[in-house]
Image (cartoon, rainbow, N blue to C red; front, side, top):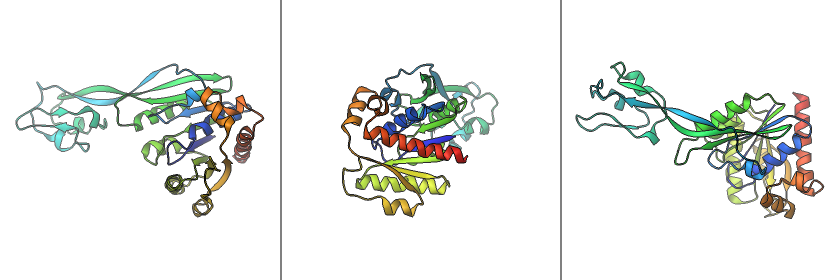
Length: 289
């Protein structure tokens, strides 16, 4: 079963929900937690774990053999990303950060061997064993890299190659292709939000995406006692369901600071019981599958 924790807005508590839920589920199931927030992966910090078993994520980069290049400019004309630059009577020049690695330049080049294969590192993936029943796969973007999608995809592929009862994804904020790559094929998607105007706005964005993808949507309202803003009408509009409201909690704050999830540090607290309740909801879905 694939389960995803997401949310349109950053800072709502996605990683807190994902790590605690992963630990709660790992009491009974073999869980692979996937930190697909490649721009700011922090699940390992919340779990007090080290990133291990690094693998590079590479992307095709054209390498020009100027001894064979005729300066025809066909590669420049066909580059959809405008990553190739050519001055009058000059050779094509590559701007690497704009290149998507699509190979169009190589395919349209009329001179065989004028554009060769080269690669650049765009990110890394890691595989860390947390406990016997809990493993963590992390994607991390290379410093200065702008394209997150290839690293999210690489993390997904590495994680899905590990046999487990549950693959639990923790996505980046937003609704771009980097999020779609993580939530695809999920049995259930948990959208984490907060009772603020921006939280409501971004929740609608993610719920709209989930409805288009025909994915079952659950909503968790974090810091639910922060204001009296209601999500009920919005959730009903998109056929979603609020499954939990997590109030401001000293236990969650302390566990966050110490890097020990609340289900471990304060297992008898109200916050821990909320995650146990979410776990039971997930188990119901597993029994239906």
